[in-house]
Image (cartoon, rainbow, N blue to C red; front, side, top):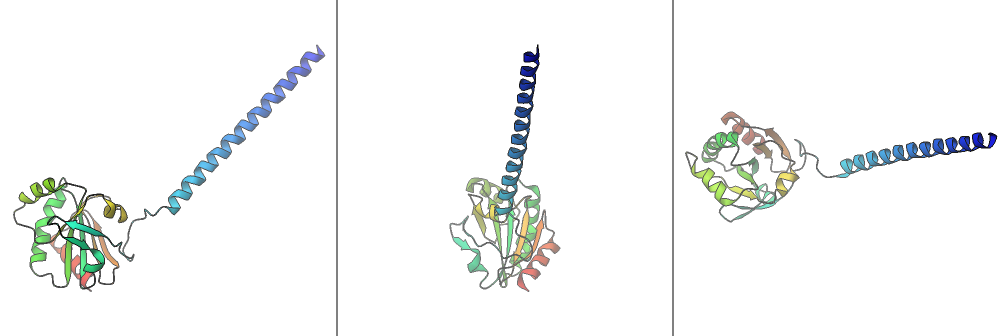
Length: 189
């Protein structure tokens, strides 16, 4: 009987050690995974561009087939970037006001409406439903690279960039006529 009890104790001790090793392994694995996740989040370049940050340069093709580059535009003017989509009702509502402000004179600034990943047919149908032809350029962000670089969330999102290439104003959601004028003022100071 003594032999049996000793064997039972050895088996119990081995089970206890195995459980402890398993627990430690799980804790180490979880800690390692948390550490890797935190490291990737801290080192990834997906931080939002905020007011005071340097604007991210880009080159896009317009609906008319011309190329525009932000760094070239800000050499002479402040720039207002308006990120939008055809499925976005607030985008549709703010476009006429944006066009009115633009047609009143844009010697000191440029408005660029950056469409997010839609095709020309969708955009053309959208534009034909507006009450007036838009005078400012429509840039096509087909790959969404500019949208990702600026970490754009809700649409519309509008960003004002001054001649020094600094983001001076940013607003998510629809702009009023007065908001657009404030963006122009910020971009041209």
